[in-house]
Image 1 (spheres, rainbow, N blue to C red):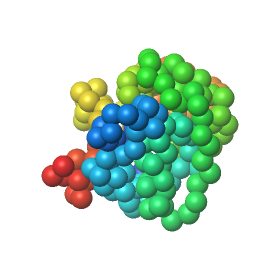
Image 2: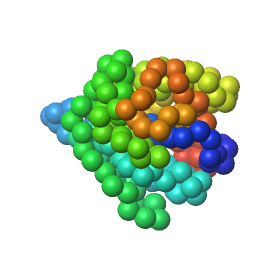
Image 3: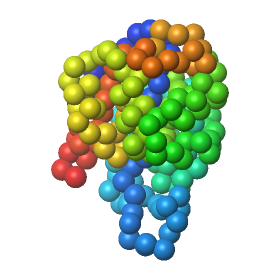
Length: 186
């Protein structure tokens, strides 16, 4: 499943794709779509995994979309302490990941562990652009598919997020909901 959290390099970027959303009500605007029951289960399980493995973020930047905010609410409920969270409109992005990188540079400061909750394909594109090195199995999984509620952790040897550059990271973890016992059958 996962390797223990490693104290490698300076800063850690945690990229959490929002959990599975519901398409039951087609009258909802895209940003207003809530989580599906499967998404609620996955977000809760990811929160427990983050807490159990000592991967607590120091700051969370979250998309304003309902499904992203609900994902963070469920993850944060499993954590042993509150974590500051900021809604950033520019995280509601579906592009090549460049806008997400700009958000990190602008809002990340020097938070040792920064967590983004956002959307694909921007999340997947950003993760693949940033993680030039790391665990081969995790990199292969991430390149194959970045499913809903998946979490990538990328370590950087930089002192501030304003210095974030393409290809400078080391992928230390890539965890999908199906890698967790409580979600393995979903």
